[in-house]
Length: 217
Image (cartoon, rainbow, N blue to C red; front, side, top):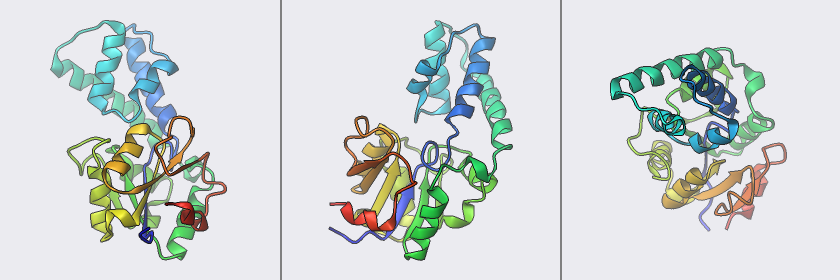
């Protein structure tokens, strides 16, 4: 096995839990359209672009509208979401994440963020984690969504590390597939039955250590 030289992280559900903010913003929009949008429906939006998310909600409600109006609604949703993001603090970082990032850097491992979110840098600034990343690749930097590996391959390139020397931390099936498609190792964060294609799965970062990276094969 190639020596691990870098750890790449997804943002939502791995570093911070902003899923609740996305749901609240989409729920507000759906309510305004008299669409019954539930937390179960929200699972379909995980890892999906903003415009595609809106399309799914409109499909649920059987609502059609011109594309220009859809763009306006998606922009409004993002404004509501950003109001919540602006209130984020260090307390919104998921348990164990900061310690693990610090351990990675102390061990000489490079770190990068690979997220579809166009607000990734803003969020890292709000929760005071930006300084712990050597590179940040977000939705403004890539053309292809996961499971395309572009976001992670670009991160590895920015770090100057070969894909096989990288391990990706992901909480979504599409993200695990993206890591695999890029020739990288992957550790799932969340439910092992859902993220079965990962090398192994952790429930969170409370007990994750650099030493555990030796379990990768």
